[in-house]
Image 1 (tube, helix red, strand yellow):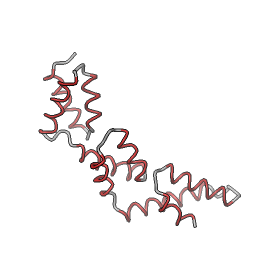
Image 2: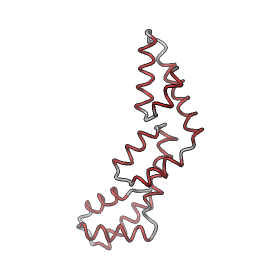
Image 3: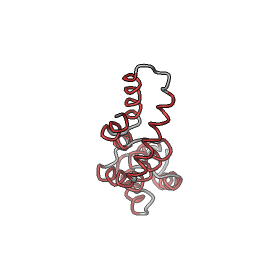
Image 4: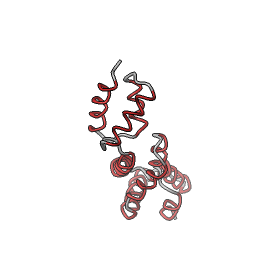
Length: 149
């Protein structure tokens, strides 16, 4: 059991270490044994002190998962919604992904996967496997279709 003052110090360190969304912080505060009123007060304090910024979190999350994991917009949006990030912040994060880099990444994934599927004989099966892979990565159908044609 932590007092709200102890929890505030711990959670500041938690937020300073890495960008966090509101739901992660709220979960952590409940783990510290705080009730909803105390948690909300601490979250307000963190926002005021700029330790917690959901828009900044969403932009960093989207950029990192796009660059490092090569995720498409659909998968990033889904992951952010799972973290209870607001639609406004999700839109801002999507706007930060540069269109040319997005298409270049999609083409690179397509080419790499195409190489691994050379042994798949029926062309329709190869095409379906490519499409499924790119969609699983979160890329939109309107970007995938021109590559397959």
